[in-house]
Structure formats: structure tokens, C-alpha cells
Image 1: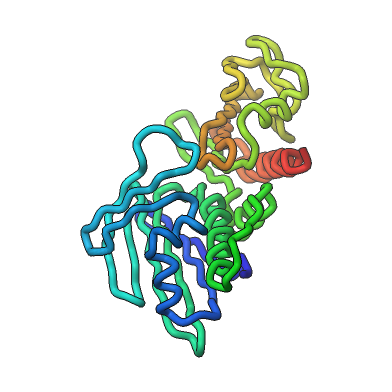
Image 2: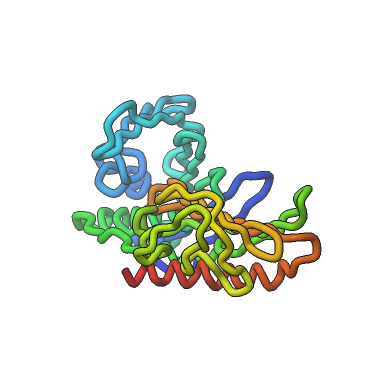
Length: 282
């Protein structure tokens, strides 16, 4: 199961992850494994109850999560070819086509959070590995991703790239990147034991080449730090919840009209990727 055969495309604010796997089993056997709740629960990340009719209800019981279960609706049922359903605001389509004595299984997961694409891809990669093991007659035994698979997908899908935005106050560069460690671990790496204090220079970990450490204007550990960036502008770090894989970093750097956005994009890309590598090492 080669992650490099998987694709991520975005259009009209929605992103589609497409993953294709060849399985050495006929369509009917694959169909049973992806629609029978007793089998789904062995490779899918939750227990499932399903009314296998178009418009039927689906309920997802996530292990270790209290409170109401997630719900969805079956949108397509065409055995043994097509099974599709909603999962919250997402849509999942499973299509099975004959391929010799086996089958091709195509999963298309459509969602709104483009920057979560690597998390979804790495999660589905493991699920599909477990599904293959189940079909082969083995008990699914898949080790959780420690981050390497996530980072491989993030690089493949080019999800670490920053953008330049025009604002009323001048140009702004923006990066949004899913990380694989929680905010507390990211904050510890950035501060290196020196907690930021308003009015004092930002710790070196929060800076990049061409972005000198001006005075901190806002700090809320372990989620937010902003500081002035001479000769004009502001750098702001925000760590949110993301996909649950780890913290979601949003970094912005504003500057005066005419500041070198190309150089800033390159410098901050290098800084963020260095941070991601350090978090993996840790």
C-alpha cells in the first residue's frame, strides 16, 4: 500500500482525498467487510450501527469518547459496488470494482479542512491496512502512526506551503500546518525553557531569518504569542486543536508595504519545517 498513489485535490472550498487499493478478494467479500457492522468495527476507528438503505442512519461510537455519538446518513447503496455515507460534515464513498480474481477499492473522503489532509490520509492508510489484514483472515494488527506517515503525506500533498495575503495594512504571509505533537510540546520546543514575557524580546525559537525578535505584545501559554517585528510589522503564532493528531499551527507575519514576501515565505517555511523535524525527534 504505497502512500504515493494517493491524491488530494481541492475545489470550491472542499477537499477530496482519493485512495485506491488492490485487494486479493472478490467484490462480494470486500463489500461484506465494509458494510457489516461486526466487521467494520475490526478495522474502522469506531463501532458502527447502520441502516443499509439510502437515507438510512449511521451512528459512530468512538472508543474512549464520552457524550453523544457522531451520526451520519447513508447516501448510496449498490451492492457489491458502491457504499457511501456522511460522517458529520464529511462524505465518504467506497467503490469496489472487479480486478481479475480480486478487487480495486477506491475510497474518496470529502471534507472542508484541507490542512487536515495528511491526518486523514495517514489514518485511512492504517485503516485500509487493517481491512486488508482482516480480508486475508488475520486479526488486524496495525501500529499507530508515530508521525512519520503523517509527515510523508504532508510533504506529498504540499501542505506546508505558505501564502501571501493582501490586507488594508499591507501584505501578510500566512502558514497553516498540522503538527504531530500537542500544543504543550510545541510550546516547550519554541520557548526552550524561557517563558515569554510581555514587553521583552521574543524567545529565539519564535523567530526566523529576517524577523528580529521585537518586544512581545501578547502571550498566552501554550497557544499564542505575538511580537513586533522591526522595521514594521508583527509576527503571530497560534496553536489550535487541529485534527486531534496534534496542534494546528497558524503563523502570520505582517510587514510594511513593499516588504520582501518571497524571502519571508522562504525563511518561515524553513523555520516551521525545522520545528516539525525537532518535534519528530522528540
